[in-house]
Structure formats: structure tokens, C-alpha cells
Image 1 (cartoon, helix red, strand yellow):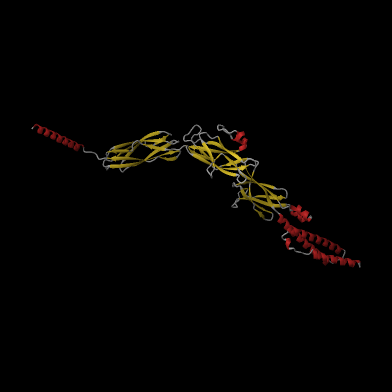
Image 2 (cartoon, one colour):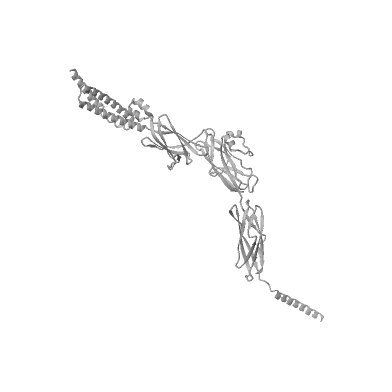
Amino acid sequence: MKKLLLLLLILFLGDVFAQTSGSYYNPKDDKYRLLGLKRAKEQYDLAKIEYERNESMFNKQIISQRDLEKAKSAYSDAEVNYHQALLAVLFEQQYVTVVEAVKYQTRDGKKRVRLKLANASSGGQEFKKLLNIEDEIFKSLQPEVVNDVYVSLLNESNAIISQPYEAKIEQIRYGSPQTLDFELLQDLDAITVNIVYGNGTQRAPKIFLQKDHSVNKVVLQSDQFSQEVDLGGSASFSMTLELFSGTNNTYKLEVVNLPKQINKIFVDPSTLARLSQFKFNESAQTRKTNLQVFLPDRSTGEVQIDKPISFYALAIPYEKLSSIGMTEDKIWTKEELDKLDIGYLKLEIIPRGRGELKVNASQLFFTALPGNKIEVPVDIKNEGTRRLDNVEFELDLPLNWTNSINPKVIESIDTREEKRVVFTFTTPENVPVGKYDIRLRTTSLADNKLVKAEDKTITIELKQSDNIIGTILIVLLIIGLVAGIVIFGIKLTRK
């Protein structure tokens, strides 16, 4: 009788378990996966207990093989549901975040980004506390680890601007951030961090780069750090000033090692206002300015043609000005500037001479008879700042005219020097009378550059030659006529 009651009780409990541990689906489990995991875990635990109880009763020959298989099937279904819910939670909860992205500059001037990534997946500890899970599959999946994390830096066009192009982190454990270091191939303040991890999950947050405040200086850069400028001209150095400081935000702009004969000013490229200092703020940590330098008209002891002049543009924290003691006469070395721990940029200017050729003539209008020679003296002067070489002349002569030039070519003319050239023109005997214009072109070379003088026009007027014998006869005729009148007048007065 007792065995019969015990069997009925077991069958009753089995029916109750089948009703409570069946494949119950709650639509909210897909939305709230963690609660679905908790429900699946409870059903799995109940199914496991029931299967172990049925197995014990089967061994005691209380239930049949069919009942044991039924319990085993329910246990297997619950186990599968539980593991599926567990995997769904684990993969959904994986999350890699960017903790910090710091932009800094190396000593060789390259811009780099130090990127710190962390596993923000909450990890298995929270699951253990919530669900009390100690399953082997849970341990083998390592929910606190994100595997195979690929990282690259992109610009607004989604082009990779980092070197290496893509970096891989084998795994990121919860609570142990990983740091990557990239070289920036394009200097930007805002980038997109492309992250691919786990089973293909991708994130691409766009972030504004932090500046390395530990440097505490302004970094100056210019693409035109060396320029050639003619004496009397000017050069403009376009510079970018980028703040790497967490304390100072006002900086004085200075230029050192530049000769006194060279004037300089800092100009705002947008407003053209003159600048002497910069103030940065959190929204504008990169500024632009132009440094303009003006060379004297003539070379001096410190400013010589073709001799490079090196100098430095400085950005000095306003608080350091009094302690540094800037003076115009001091020549600063790179080592001294490094000790000051300030931002500086080495620039270079190469003075170049400018050839200027001038042709002077006291007279450009001449009269002559056909067949005569006309000499035209012309003075050639170098009014530039560089020696002139190979001064040559070209003439547009009328038909059948000949000429000679002495000298034909002037080998060189130093600055402020003047040399004379004589042009001799010979006209044909039968050339018609009238005015003839001859164009003179003068060219030379200065530093292998062509220099042209202003064209000159020489005007020669040819007149017809006079008949001397006829002129003499006319004069004698007039004299005879006058003499006859006088004689006739005297005879009349005597009568």
C-alpha cells in the first residue's frame, strides 16, 4: 500500500513539473534577455532535479524506461534553452568603449594618438551575482573577455589615416583596459575610431581628440619653413599653433636670431590684424597665424645674398616672459630653447639678389644725310641687387641698313655699375629721305634668370643733300643784281 501511494505521489509531482517546467515562452524574454536567462536557468535547474530523481527511481525499478526517457528529454530541452539564453546575453552584453584618445607630438614632429580601450561588458561577475551561475560553459565562454578586437582611425571620408592602418588586440578583459598607439597620417582634431570585435560587432564613434596636457606648451608647425626672397621683398610663413597644455592658455609670440635689418610682424590670416599674443580656449585649441618678414633693399653685413639666415619663432607662456628675459641681441641655440621648455619652430630665409637692367641715353633723335654713319652712345646700368651677366642687344633695323655694336656683349655688370655701348648705323646711298625708328631690346641674366630692360626707340631723320654749285650761282646772281642796282643809283644821282 505504501509503495502504491509513493508511486502516485511521484507521478503527481512529475505532472506538476511537466506543467511548470515545460517550454514556456514569454515574448518579453527577447526584449529583456537577462530576465529570460534567469527564467531559463530556473527551468534548467528544475529539469535537472527531476531527471536525477527519475533516474534514482528507475534504478529502484519504481518507474519505467519510458518515464526516464521523458524526463531526460525534458532535461535536454531545458539545458538547450538555458545555454541559448546564456549565449544571447553574453554576446549582447559585449561592449568595447574608448576610454581616452590623446593626441601628442614626438620630438621628430610627428603627430600620434594614444588610444585606450576598455571592456565595458559588465562581465560575468554581475551574471554570477544575479543568477548564481557556476556552469562550465559559462566559465569556458569567458564572459569577462572580448576577443579579437580590430581598431583603425578614420577621417570624415572614412579613409584610414592611422599607421598602422589597423591594429589588433587579442583580448580585452573586464577591468584591464588596453592601450594602442597610432601615428596620424593626417593631422586632425576629430577622428572616427572604427572598432570591430567578437562575432562581428562594429562600433564607430566619432571623438574629439584630447591634447597631451603633460607637455604644457604650444606646438608650432609650418609647411613653408624655408623661403627664398629678393632683397627689398617680403616672405610670409603660414603657421599652425596647437595647444598642448592644461594650465596655460595665453602665449606671447616672439622671433629670435633675426638680424635687425629685417623687420617682422605676426598677422591674423583672416582679419589681417597684427598679433603679439594668442589666447586659447577649450573650443579653439588650434590657431593659425602668418609671420611676415621684410628684407632690406641692399645687402648688409648680416644680410648677404645667397647666405641662409636661420631664426626661430617662439610661443612663450605669458607667465614665463619675465623669467626668460628676451633681448634682441642674444643669439639663441636649439639646446637653450629646449631647456626653456617652450614651443618653437626653426625657420629659414635665403636672401636673393634682384637684377634690374636700365638703358640710359642722352639723345635718341638724330639727323643725317643718306649714306652717312650715325653713332649713338648708350649707357647700361645695373640698378638691382645682383650682378648682371651676358648683357646682349637686339635691334630692329630698316631694310638694307647696317650696324655695329661696341662691345657686342657685356660679360658682367656689378650692382650700381654703369658701362657704355656705342651703336653705329650706316644708311644706304639711295635710301629715301624721312624718319626711321630703330627699336633697341636689351636682355641679361641674373642668377640664371632672364632680365629685360625697357625697350628704347632710336629715331633717325634723313634729309636730302643740297646742290652746292647751284647755290653759289644763285648767290653770285643776287650779288650782281644788288651791285647793278647800286651802280645805277649812283649814276642817277650824278645827273
